Image (cartoon, rainbow, N blue to C red; front, side, top):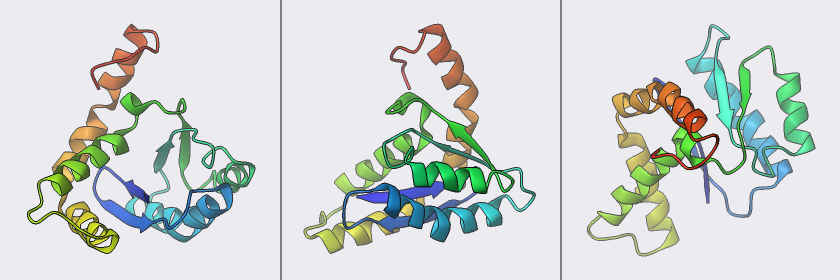
Length: 152
């Protein structure tokens, strides 16, 4: 499992998770990786962070961390498990497609990790920008179907 973050203009770190993501592990990622990434890509303090409300994301420790850092960036709350509204799902699909097209395919977990890191770094900034710019259309589509499935 991996944790990842990106912005309109840049890819953030890709973090390998050896175990299931818990609230405590997520807190460690937030403080070690998210905060520094957002402070770099949004040095004006106008950054916005989107995540779904998966259990570790909505844990007490993570919620408290976001409250403590509310002056550093804006945190959006999204419905849990709502892939239509989460651009990172599109990025993960692109990574999966790239891994599936590798020749030879990765054979070991370490090979897979290496391929994922390589492909992560190869995603073009314009791809990220297109995903971010699609958000108003995604929201409109979701509203039209009253929260049902959309084409995204």
